[in-house]
Length: 594
Image (cartoon, rainbow, N blue to C red; front, side, top):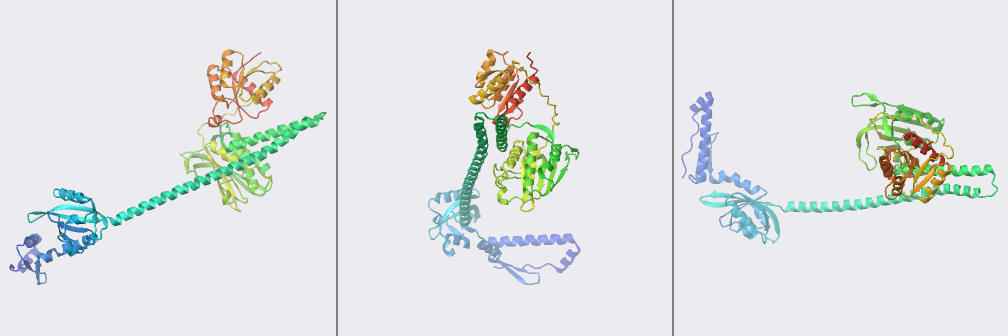
């Protein structure tokens, strides 16, 4: 049946509505409600069709088919599988995408139980989802089996649909095949990347080990070469001293040659310890600007007249912008040595002619150097630049290695820059280098700025020589038999009384047995059991009136704890140095013996 056409709006009422906005709104709301009721009636099946008059007076026929057609087109075009299941799980409707996913013609899909298309072992999952969907929307992963027998992963969403008193299920199925392929490809790519990273780390570690071994070989060869030269002089001098009837002048010359060679050997080991950051530093707070200015006065002697020296010392500034001195806490002697080494290196790079620039200033960071990240802080920067030949890019990573040098044979040991590097690192700073081949090089030494007052300089008053037989008694603690025998003999020659202990326990036992016998303790640092620093602290606690002097050629204890608080005599030492430091230690303690 077909109802009478719905008349359009009365022209008079339209005219009235146009003049009354509220009336027009009520008219439109009524027409909207009428349209919704009509559409609902069509879907309930109350009418076969509804004919209305269009805006241009044309007749428009609405049926159930053309009312729902946009929704059907939408369902057919979406990229997800959409379907409706009957109460027994039979497919009542399936869209085109679902048919493609299951690899079955769409017309054959209707009437098939959905359980037929799930993979083996997935029937229970489907049944559970259907049971849960009867109460509330249910979702879960489900593996399907297509018409060719292949498995296809999917994600299923089910919800209840009331239709004519029967409970149906509406479902949406998302194909996860492409996603799983991408995940698998991503996992494979990640595995390849991990393997490449592992292989790269292995290769880099092998390279580092190779470079380390090369550096050790170069270091060993350099040490052996230099020490063999020094030992040759010493051996030759001692052989000549054994000749009978040797004139006094020659004897004195050979003795001086031995003494000078020992001093050169001591300097060589000191440079090696500086590179290894194992030297015993004597840090003080001083003005780096003044230190540079003092060295700059002697730079002209080192560089020669053809090199122009430009020195610039900028003040440091605090957070408020106020200037202050560029104070650092470091070993001033090693600081001067580092400056001289950099100046000599710059002089040689310029072949005796060019411009040498020295600058001191404030820095708020140490740039990323070698394998270390950038360090933000408060630093004093000392830069030394030259207009020389520059450094080849391939050599930049090696210039701080001991015995590495680009100079000709006999023109350098390759230890100068390694001393600067070790001093900077052990002082809490670093050294940077920038170089352009053929244009020049700039080295910048970074040291942490000190916030303490400068260390006051005390006038060193050398004690008066002790008269023979003065009777001062020294407890010598030395585990090396040769060094212990030499020290006790040398002290005996100078009129000291000595008792020799081989380790800390024996020394403490001697002090316990005859506490008033000893005026000073002279101990090595590196010993088995308790080291010399710990022994000195025990003695200081038990007998604060007895001064303790340390002696060492190398000690990680001294390198790590620079503020040990005891006087230190570096090995190798002379008899005069030994006597002087013992007398000074006794003077500071106020010990007197008539």
